[in-house]
Image (tube, rainbow over all chains, first blue to last red):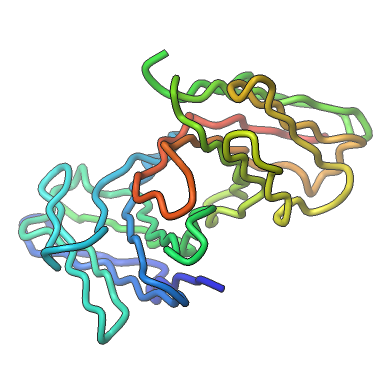
Length: 114
Length: 116
């Protein structure tokens, strides 16, 4: 069965500094990996995905993520954080052996301090 | 519509009453998902529909929960005899699904259910 871990409940970073939100996964087949962001009282918004090809994928709002097969990780990164990036971030996986529901991590709350 | 639409946006109900939550997915999306999110927490999978296949109901927490999808489009999640622990935000999503599909899911704004 597939699973996703986000080891940090909370990440604090100063505005202008680089940010990283960590994600590791476990699947039986090959993973399709996704990042979503949730602002207060809103649904989830898609940021980016890894399907195949280049391990570094770029997405919305200047975010990027690096797929690392050997470490089974898919960390979300941004070179320079904005206060408006403060939100709840979810990593999700689909297993190509199953391809059905998305399995989400528990979420990481990012706070960017001015 | 352009996005996934859920109604109502908020629902307050008395313990023991039945509630129906509606989801209108993006046109053409064959996959539809229901998730539940407790306050500030992660997403709990409830049920998944893919085309005309039998739904994956493995996430439904009890037999008080059921869902249907009519005509491959609109879905209704029904909770019978609501309990206070059912209070949560219920999120619906849709995608161009199918086995092995690599497309992302698009989420609605959710229905906030409060059982008093």
